[in-house]
Image (spheres, rainbow, N blue to C red):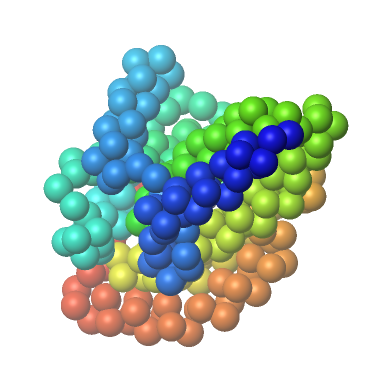
Length: 266
Ligand SMILES: [Zn+2]
């Protein structure tokens, strides 16, 4: 390996990090390479594709319910958090217990989730968690990480690193670097979510019930080691520690007259 090539590695990375570091709402340093506008455009495009390719619920009561809950959650965002995006939600016919929110304000709920999030508070807990990922720029961070990883691989290949070393780099990035990082993202989304649902007038205690239901129903489908979700016990402990603050926010939301009454479809 020539010295000029091995020199390339740190310089390239350093310049990327210097231009792209920012802070998440939880004051964690993060690397984001893309603009908000780019991410929003990607999110909106992905949402349109999903709407074209996946079956959409035709049950008006399901749709009304999903809109009612997500409207309360979005209404609780500060103006700068809400941006000028057209926030909207689609209910997809899918047995998985899943939901998402994309940069650009597009959200989705799978019908399977409605069997596990059994009341408006629990559905709000999921949606506020998903919106938390958006507020904390997690998609941008993930996209940036995989771009950086690809650059890292390309540079390592140019530098003539052996294929065994490449495998170790890949393995290390998957398990050592990416996994704790994603868990941190999940915890951040939990923290943002519990406060957001409370501000939207939903009972934050129900977020704990929800994640318990999720864990009991195989919400974490992969083995714990490879799961991107925090261990249920860690998650419950973290949420419990936030509960007093979230309940105070909930009480003041109710005092302001923010009392959602979204009727689940029977
Ligand atoms: Zn999440």
